[in-house]
Length: 345
Image (cartoon, rainbow, N blue to C red):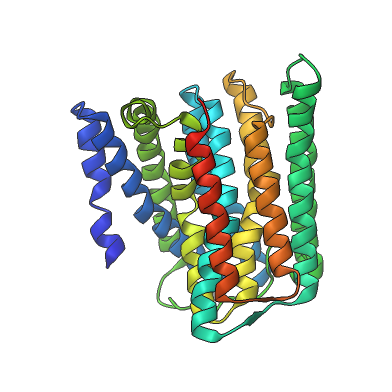
């Protein structure tokens, strides 16, 4: 019901943009209209995953869970906002690890008590988090140590990251829940919905998201200037947070149902997919578009991702989670957001 009410923001955002309304108003309406579109895509993906079986469903979730971030990134790249693209990726990782997991631990802990997660799954997820952090440290250190560009380095690393992602998908099919994506089959809560209807809904939502992302991208810089916000803060907190709405809502849904393993996949797994799939794809697309997109994030962004990774790993490695640990994760996100707000342009 809420989504059906919010979906009216999509045509409103388009009308405001076409009539050259105030950029701040256009930006706020367009940003809010992304929320129902992400929700529509999440619902369609969940229905398709339930119908296609565990392996195909896991592959579908792995491919589509971060589609909003990819669409937003491509549109921003076309407008020459490669630094904003990297900021939105950073924001997506931080939102998934700290906000999504934090809220899920609070909701799940208050509703179901301490949540226990399989230690084998935790070990794999923790290892993947460390590897992803390492992948972002290398180009950042390279840029500090030399005056040469990092586009060629990022291109070669992107090929390796995509290969790792493909290997992970193979491991998902061959060995079930040891990969990033769970092989558990979700119960089909929408048996009456045909697969073609879900695919149609997914396609329509993706197309509309492309239009809305274009509007957000065009209005971002004038809005940031009017509000006194930097491009980095806008990308991390606004674009990154909105792009992660689907994962955050999914993690809350799983937390209420007492499914901590699926919470882990919707948050930690989604963050690793951002690094292994979305970031390298955007680097390759940037090469095609002639935009200087690379994996050399700013040092503060890298430090924030590494800190979020270490804090998350430390809190979940004992195999349990409670509401207080969720509050700690939200506190860490708030501290990092304050830091990005005061970061010079």
